[in-house]
Image (tube, rainbow over all chains, first blue to last red; front, side, top):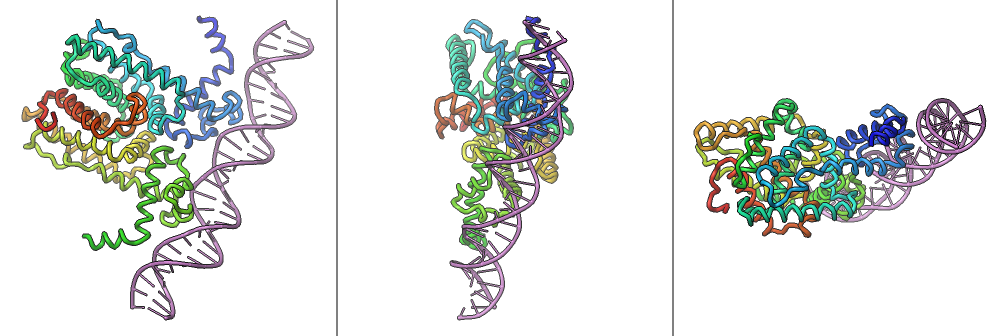
Length: 214
Length: 214
DNA sequence: CAAAAACCAGACCAACTGGTCAGGTTCTTG
DNA sequence: CAAGAACCTGACCAGTTGGTCTGGTTTTTG
């Protein structure tokens, strides 16, 4: 594993590609796809524009490559939850994971949000199908929990929407939050926000907050 | 009141202005500011492009005019809540109001979200100040409720963020929701989502859901 | 060490797009 | 009803921007 990786990481091309993707992530998050200038990405990556187009055939190609990388962040421990697991534990962990993404990769979250708001024009139907089946399987687990009496009656869709919305909000609306709180949220505030959110949602659907999230 | 209004509404200019704003709302919501073409707005409003520029000096001018109209939607009954009011009643109504905006004006919600995600480049500092002082006064009311024992201990900021996030989600992420649920949400589903959300949040902060929201 | 592959970058361009201009027509009003 | 205000629109343009082309240099590899 380290072999193929190190080979890739060593090559000057791989380093440039990484830098370009990082630069692109910031630019696309701030300006959106249309508003982003290839020249600005190049400036940020400290490369000539031609060089950016050398590594990624086109602006679209670069955006798509970036989007693909971003989508891989959306996996989590919740993916493998089973009916016999503890709902409180699983959901609390899931919420905390989501909050961690918002804290560490706010730009990735923003790009994803922009994509969805614009009607997901660049999300492949493969991704959509995959996402749908993921949703169906998770809804099914939540329903099993409800049948088993481990989780009070609640529409699983709305519960998941709420988790996504409120955790993602901390990334997407960071500008508003910074404005309203007077300064950007630091790690401690994120920890508090996470506790607060876990409590709100778990208590909201009648679960007890696990000790390590209190 | 009807005098000045009717005069305004009758004039051909006012009608065109309204049509252009409506067309612009849809275009900006789908494509973002940079991605929107004046020509497309004109097509949608069934006017020549020059005509659009005649009524609104520039693309920026049109966007700003639209944004101003949109911001006026953000007022609600919660603005005037007092310490002596009932938290459950006030918050439930506030949540329902927000959901209603998502249902009726999804494009407006999207444009607002896009603006914030991009770092609010077009929101005047006047609006920001106004928004900040609104936030402060509402946080203060929530704190009073907590002191009076009418509302359990919770960070007022996080509570408000959660309300905004989860209600706005239904507008901003409508494409995702439609994809996952198989079809767009109708009025009945919105009503169910609202009930679900009111219950989740109120129960989440230890309040009893008022009968008319059950 | 040679040659192929990978990388680099200035000059250039075609397409697009916001916005102007000039010459109208229609509506309002004194 | 005259004249000014409001409205309309085709023709046009200048700036921007994604992307190409060409001629390199550096790195890898057999």
